[in-house]
Length: 198
Image (cartoon, rainbow, N blue to C red; front, side):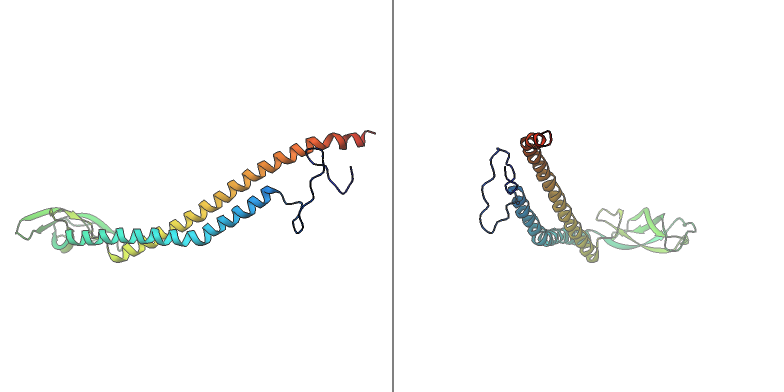
């Protein structure tokens, strides 16, 4: 066996590599090269597309909610019938309120009002079609924020999925390479060991 031709797993020297090709590059190296390029393409092209699609879908869904809530909820003036306690500035507390429906029916309920609001003060609350106290309707700004948040999470998800796929690919190919190296060493090791025992 010559030093220029390393032993092959079959005991014969490997066939000469075609011109322009590195003889040390294995099939697994080529597979890894092309799969990594494919993952890069998914990352560069797929991430923006997925983020825009998810953001657009979230925006359209949120805008539908904005329209529905705007149609079903209305703001009315109510009288505070229980005072609120002192709290830090800007805090809100639950308090009992009383208001009149459009037909004149007096209703009571519990709503969030600014802290330290005196009893008997007039506050604005939101009610639904059934006359129950509810939260304010979603705004267009909230819909846009929701769309950006969804798009951003989708982009991060694509990046994480691509990174995980690349890690799995590298792990699988490395296992295959280690198995090939071990098989080749088992074929070559007796010859090397015999040289040193002469």
